[in-house]
Length: 489
Image 1 (cartoon, rainbow, N blue to C red):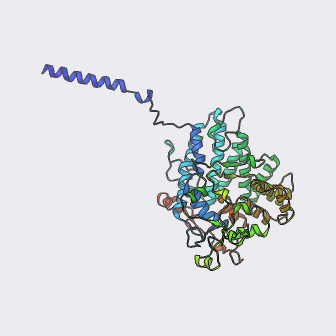
Image 2: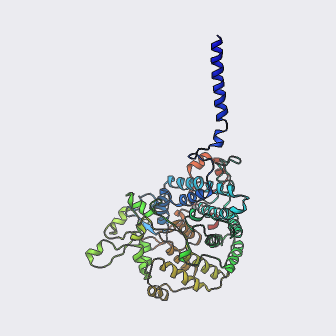
């Protein structure tokens, strides 16, 4: 019995020693493979990459739907192919919503939280806020009223919110404009930036400053119909400062490659079908002797048989039977220009030609600028063509001929559409809904039926299921594609 007591005491002593030795072990010896905090540099890299690298975001949403809706592309299978008419797969919208909110906005919020109040981190916070506005303006331009002020807080331990309220698009735009202005004003040359962790500008906050101002001009012009006073005020301020991106070389691009493959490469590499240049686009280019024709499209296979170069597009909004009856086929129609199929074809975030066309619109409105509307327009056309290495004399001939400035917003809008072909479907879609340009046509030359045109994406079913009360509070147009967005009224 005494021996048993000694054994029990020995076991108890051993256990107590083990507890004493391991107490606080995790605090003193953190597992390097399971960090509880992530450096903001890594978070920022992930946020930028996840904005663009998802297949459903880049292929299904941009190529299969938005590029078709804005008549850049069409499908030989006709409107039976999902997205080739004015339909779209709900899973595509679900994925865009999921990626941008949970992978991007939530992590940007974490960056902003970790850098809050740290003077030496002010530039990193400013860049994160600029990128947050960039992503949010794409979100609200697809859906309208969306979670904004309460969004992306599902991972916040002290302020967790899994059912965020919806903000009105008008309030969102006012706040985004203010956020960009504040971020630009907060930059401080004395402190560090993201450096190599920044996939876009390598941490150069002067470039980020110019990017933010250019984005702010885009947002101001977006609301020019519904809030002209604010739009004019912001535009005149920016035009007076004139601190925008200055050329194609310092515009903002996303570096697609082996880690994040370009959308067209993904589509063709995985043999998921194809979209071809639209009949509308091809006729527009041929009708104005636009030298970008041979960039945007390849010669149709029938060219080898006929002994002459044939560039032919596929009509939008027709059935397969109608397309076949009109003699459009694999060999008689063009494919997308080969350069766009490269794995590393850079993605356009915001470009210099777009800036020029925004400035041309501002000048036409009388909202400031040191140049004439014609000069801004010509600079935009020149930059858009130089981006594709169009020869100087071809550009000059175009501007002196079919592309000569006529002083209309329609021409400016059409040239902006051309500058965005295959590169930024989200912006093309937004600008068409805002301006109505270019005037999209059916194969018979009549204008498209605006009553059928999708003005927005319906809210994802998962959002309806999980945040139904706040979705329902939006009111009219909560789950349809026909209700116009606030800025498109």
